[in-house]
Amino acid sequence: MKIIDNPSEQQLSKLQEILDNEKNAWIVDIGGYLVSDYIAAIDDSGELVGVASIIMYESENAELHKLYIAPAHRRRGIGHTLFEATIDHLRTSGIRKILIEVVGNSSQFWSTVVTPYKTHWYDDSKFEIIVSG
Image 1 (cartoon, rainbow, N blue to C red):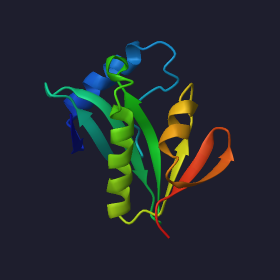
Image 2 (image 1 turned 180 degrees about the vertical axis):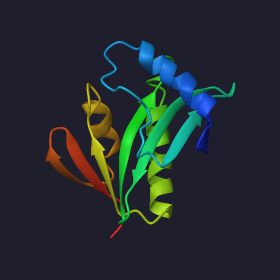
Image 3 (image 1 turned 120 degrees about the vertical axis):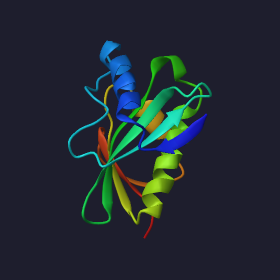
Image 4 (image 1 turned 135 degrees about the vertical axis):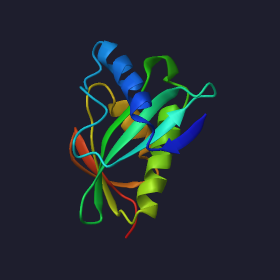
C-alpha cells in the first residue's frame, strides 16, 4: 500500500461509485466544495482504496471532512495508516487542531485511533484532536 496526496478526479470518482453502492454508509460523498486536500491509500495494483478529505481553515485549524475505506479493504489497518498520514500532513502544514465528526458506526474506529492524541470531545459525535501547542 502507498499513501499519496491529491489523487486524480478519475480515481476519486471510482471510489465515490463504491460509496454510492454501499448500503448504510452513513456518508453521502467523499468530497465537497470546501475540501482543499485529499490524502489517499493506493493498493499494490494502483487502485484507490481509501481517502481522507480535508478542509483547511484560515487559522491553524482543519477539519477531517471524511475518511472512507472501500468495504473490501476494511479491517486491514488501512484506515489507521491513512489517518496517521493525514495527521502528519496537517501537522507539516502548521495545523494545531483538527475537528472530526463521527458518523454511523465509526465510533469504535475513532476511539481506537485517537488514543495517542490529546482530544477534546464536544459530544458523542464531534471532537477535536490537538496535534501541537
